[in-house]
Structure formats: structure tokens, C-alpha cells
Image (cartoon, rainbow, N blue to C red):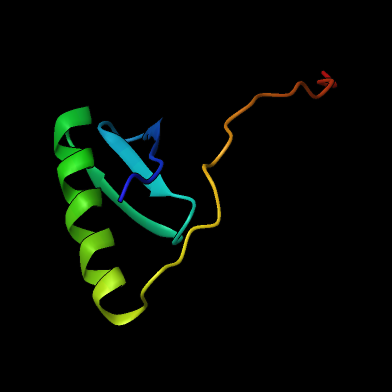
Amino acid sequence: MELSAILIPAPEGGYVALNPETGTTTQGESIEEALVNLQEATGLYLEEFPLTLSGRSLLTTFQVATHA
């Protein structure tokens, strides 16, 4: 099963990893560690809550005006 991963640099260092299809979130000191942790956490989640995907996720970006 192919799932999505979003990695965000953490303010304290390392990365926060999120799987939007399940809501699973974890962290790691490196991108590789964060992805391994996310894969493990998501696998455990899916053992309890099976997921049926109806299509592929779409990742895009958008802009918001900033007010200084």
C-alpha cells in the first residue's frame, strides 16, 4: 500500500512526520529516522484500523498573505 508522508522541520531539531491518510504522526532526528518511525507507527495503526483507499492523495501548495 502506498501512502503519503509529510515531513516538517521541528523547531527543536529533527523532523515531524505525518501520514495524512491515517493521521499518524511521529518524529525523528533525521528524515530517514522520521520515515522509518512513521512507517512503523502507521503499520501498527492499520493493524487496528484497516484503511480502504479510493484513490491517490494529491499534494499541492497555496499562499496566504502575511501581515507584518
